Image (cartoon, rainbow, N blue to C red; front, side):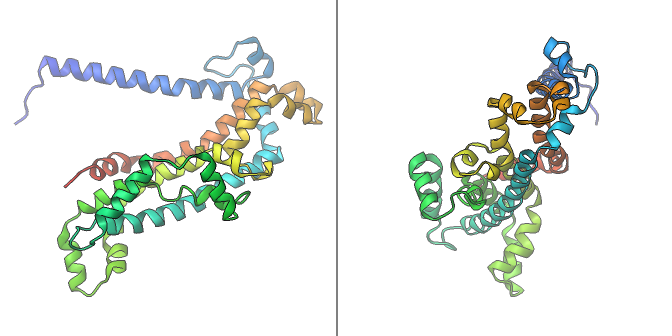
Length: 294
């Protein structure tokens, strides 16, 4: 039977939608402003005429940025980091979460390992011991220094193991009766059934690697090994020297530090904006099911 919503519920829905739309607009407006600046002339940006729509439309800033070797090199490093970091991180998270999702009678030391991981999440060793460890194992100035230290994210492990614990035990028992071992059960039963949670964790991992900039600054000795966000950080702080370094005087007449910063920031954000819609449909379901406790 369909019941008519009360006036209070209608008012609540209207207020709820108005609040969410307002918050969405507040989140989108800065990105729209940056995009408008990147597509406007340097004179219009300097005069303060650009708000949320390009003035004197031009793509000179993007042409200036995309011809720079440093930008393309850092972009390649970031893509390499995301691909390796996601593959290594997701593999380790899956094989860590599977045994930790078992009951104590099936995995005797489960509680000990869970507490060990939780402690590492709550207590950090500090920046200097972390750096010395990475240096002593010979990872400094290599792509693996950006991939391996944070490969096992404990929060994502907890999210996935809770998802595994929510799966019916009968599926695992049926697999064992058919002769499958733990590896076959993990590959053929657990992984296919955990697509929403894995998609959510994959999105977390991709965004984390793509936005990370601090480790690139301190673990890379050569600027050509900087990931994109570390390079953008140096550009935003010292853009004047970057402009002075160019020999193309026509580019200097059309491009300012603000339009170049806007173009590089938008180009740095664009890959995540393209990936998110493909994984968004799994996001709510993966987060909800992953948070259910037995």
